[in-house]
Length: 271
Image (cartoon, rainbow, N blue to C red; front, side, top):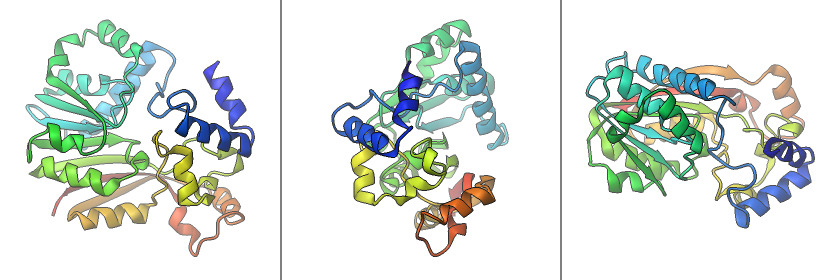
């Protein structure tokens, strides 16, 4: 039922605009909510998805996570990914952070089904504004910071990275996979149509509900350089030639190639 409502709302640009305005200002967490995606309808499917993400995090740290302390940014609907890392890779402690408390009832079903409850005491859950990270975690205490499709929703990236760099050990690492697509917002009008709205109006439609911040690859590179972070970039996906050609009919930009990256990953460490 909820998916049918979303499809209806997104069928017309002006109805979609109205739905975001209402949700952002009056009906928060009812329509098009941030962080409620479960990636699969079954408990087993959700668990398998979490395992894939966990293994990806481990691989990008060469698998040597035993006794390490992790910070996950944007935990979303479940802590299962981190519980799996604790169980399979010997992680000693994890801080799970999200702007919103998005944990869902299905999480308990997965924990019970896969007997993960014994590892819950190694997780500390934090939510609220980005500065809650620094308030709840000691300086230079984190070995590895990870996120998956999260940074593109953060409205104040400088504040977030001020806090992340504060808690990261000098020899610590970060891994962030970033999805620069529209996340279904105005997708019917074009993959990059969400870039056509002015910043003020865009914020009115979703500043309170974690909508995409519309940063481009070059913006992230500049951000990392500002915080003296060495960055290794891998581009996972680019928009199609057809998508970019269509975007040129509604985007007024000097260089459309700035918009070509759809999904990228960043491996970071302090220079």
